[in-house]
Length: 401
Image (cartoon, rainbow, N blue to C red; front, side, top):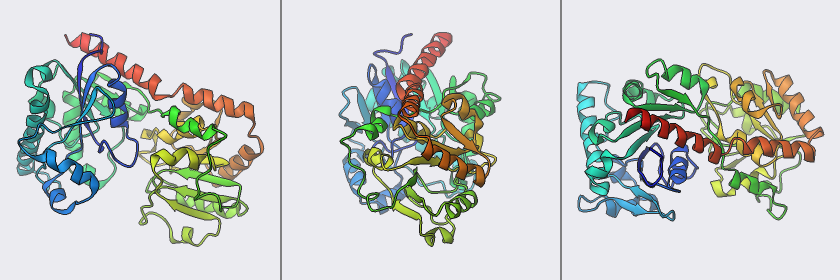
């Protein structure tokens, strides 16, 4: 089989119109270039139905009805969204036979909506991709597609995910025809459960991040009053960040401004960060404004802490930074990344090394090095990665015929 003019069903872990670009929806958009793709939007629950009244909810509400087929068109001709009716709110329950029974009801609701939207016969010829939505492991059995794939993009870290997800993901990995992981560590873990497991790293939308190189692009207004030079981070400010190392680096470089662009999970951020004069939290920035923010960085950083899950992280922002031509300094949280970034990213094990790397990057940022970064990013684009993804699906499909 050649994956062209086929039906592809993707159960995503993200809302199709969420505030951040997601791997799930990026895969859907890419495959829709020459396939009929149905992206099953991350389902609402009855709790959401009672509490949410925002625009995203109101847009979906008419499609919740049992009379609706749930299909929402997009601006991509061959990509359609499937909106599922509200599901039972069950994650608060302890792991038990009763929880699994209620989960099976939710899975039947999702399956019935997909069947109504697409038709049973088309589903039997379809490729089904569970894109890290490990909450619904048995949906593939109800759909009986021609090929089922689990796309594993992250470790299960949060208690909310691990509560039922550890068991559910194991089922999903074991019973999928193909498992694709975005980090080498995840690949090593999952192939113990399923030998048909492969490693294809994450990538970046370089057509977007490269806009930072446009001379006519104006630096984002939230950076204009911040003193230069700027050391910047774009992304969630949460548990993965090594705040101890960062604190030492920030205090050792008082002549530099440290800018954090993204939503802040305040329970993880030490109080002292709000008192340091050269630290600036500028809040969540829409994805479309990302190039204008990164353009204002002199050095971009990825200060993740090194712990038991670090080597499973393959951050999109790494290649977004490089695609914007920016020098990058990171902690040595996952040294597998060196293979993909050559010598253009400095990976540091201590605050002293991190400070030295920032200083060196500022002093040695040349046009030649910028072009090297852009070239490296081009080798790690979504077009390249998803071509590999597509080829792997085709090979697996042929083997399963």
